[in-house]
Length: 236
Image (cartoon, rainbow, N blue to C red; front, top):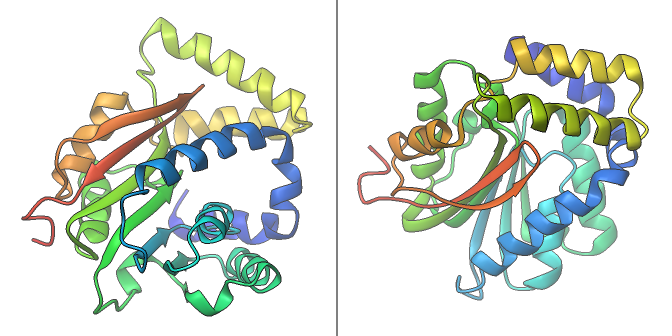
């Protein structure tokens, strides 16, 4: 799928997205808890870039715990960003947010950020060079030494481990009331439309995008997450 097709899918899912994935919330909650812990030493007035923010789950989690932090929310799907904005207004932190509808490369950000989040986004970029360039775009919007918490679906798809993880993943989706038709589409998408790479390969693409060697800090099934620090050459 091309970016416009992916965007259209999220446009359609926006209104029901959080409800649809409610039963997988423990995974998301653990990722957010660990991310907040890894960001704990950031300044009290830190600026956080949230790339592919979706409905704003990680933004809300961080905003509730750090009342002085400011956020730049980047999301190409207008309906998803609208849900994020509504959440921010309802929970009282919208004044600390800048909302940008579009892709990262369309964001004019003269002020560099202290940290960034990017959860389940780069996996949709199938070309390795383009994926590294995407991470380079994030690095260019961070201060030197700025942190990136990123996650993607990852596994060595040619290994026996992948089939074990994939089967368990699909059973989890079924338990979360995802329809059999949707699960079948998801399995096809993992084979054709999602760049599921070995974790070491994803880490190497992050590093190629201008970061110091990433540290994996989380795994839940197929989701892996890394903490990376912008290298001095990250904006190149």
